[in-house]
Length: 581
Image (cartoon, rainbow, N blue to C red; front, side):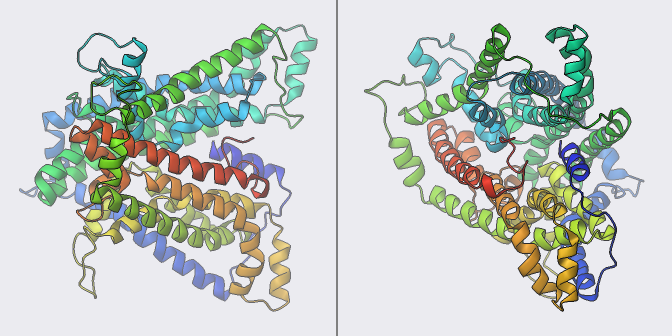
């Protein structure tokens, strides 16, 4: 989606494309960025590859990798990872395509609200989504019990491979939705009008024109959903571990937590397999986009095809039924679970209580500390990423520096790789004391901050770069001709132009990092717990109602931030907020 959007913007903005030789101060800036990306992104991943490809104990070539692959548990986890991910992609593709078509081609009531709720799985961490669905489906769930709709007692059916595929399919559906909606946004109205003049009905136009042109976007979004699924940790952890359905991410977590750093070589080999799966998917996506993309002439934007009548009503009904099922009902189940005194108690006016909020959240020093840790870590990571992104985007977008653009691609790697893989890579680099100073940051908040700052940099870099692509480079040249140095131009010309997008990106980093689990699960230690880790721990220990209360507070906090970002939309570049056109 980002590729499609950026490509479209570049063709729409008449900015010059010529490259400029970097000046002295800009070369120093590039060196600093090389050090930042090299130390925090490239070096950890390179270290992981070297560890995984190391000889075995007997000196055999690729001994560590061979030994890992020979394990029956590893092959089973690999098979489960692939099958569950493929199943989830089928759900993501069908759901994301249908919702994108309905919200683009029909006049759906409360369209912005529906779009925000469709995209809500992107804002809600996977462990909270899994917890919400556990509270929604099952014999002892408060919501269904209160409505008299609870099924017969028995194990929760979500603790299985298909349950994991279902939830990962819903969670990664926005990737397909965004890709299809972006492709439809650039579909010219003239094509549809020509088909109507020729006598084609809406169904035929949809089947013979719209869907074929959207097919590359559907495929690209589906492959992106697959890459995200193979690296998902929250859903397999909450459903797969109790359901005895191991996947590669959960196997890495269990082995590292069970055997410690003595298993580092083995888990590095597992992480390399995950990285190969995700990398192969992204490579296939890039090749398919290049071969299957169909250029269309620019023209008026596609209007909704269903103006009124049963087609429009049907599309609206389908969208809101899906929104209720995938977003509203699970969150309602989470809230009702947080208000019940214990698991299995039916919620009523007499049993409703806030004791879970009082005891499990506000009464726990560890949970309060986790809130504080997540707040400050997320704030610091967002600040660092924003400060780095502005000069980074300046070199790559305004100065058209080829090394900066290559560096930008490297900076994307920690974000597109599975979080578990990146966490392992960080452990490998920072396990031992740092050279020269002799201090180890492993097990401290510093390693979490470094990991967040490196992993979430692309969230700020992309919108900031898009904003600076639209700025005329002559402004910077004029400043230079008037004698303004690099730092003066950055603060007086570049920063004001990039500020809205950079601030919005920083807030998105804050929201993403606040509930993060995949990286934190392997890097946290006693005293530096995070909100995501505490939700997972409470659920893992059997305190479901406490985990639900903490999840509700966490979602409310993120929702307030999302509303704040939405309020900034008049000052943001188009496309910065995915729930707005």
